[in-house]
Length: 74
Image 1 (cartoon, one colour):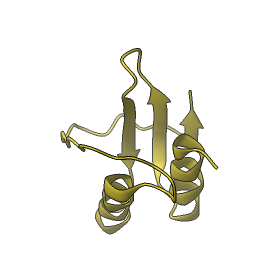
Image 2 (cartoon, one colour; image 1 turned 180 degrees about the horizontal axis):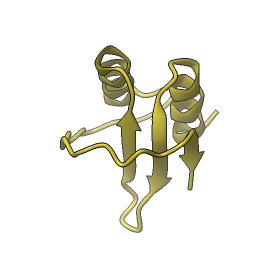
Image 3 (cartoon, helix red, strand yellow; image 1 turned 180 degrees about the vertical axis):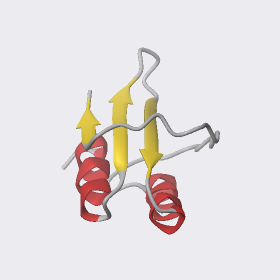
Image 4 (cartoon, helix red, strand yellow; image 1 turned 45 degrees about the vertical axis):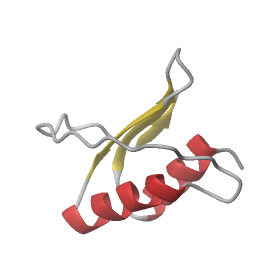
C-alpha cells in the first residue's frame, strides 16, 4: 500500500478528517482535523510512514479548522 492510502486508512480508523495529496515537487501534503490525540497520532505516523516509505522530513503548521467531511486522497 502506498503512503497516501496508508495515511487515509489510518485517518479514517481514528475518525480524523482531512486530505493527503502529492505535490508537484514530489512532496506529500496532508491536513488533519479531529481530536488532538488522534491528530498527533497521525503526525507521528507520517514521521515514519508505512513499511517501505522513505520519510526525510515532516513540517507541521497549525491552522484553524476548515471543517472537511471525511478523508480524501488526491
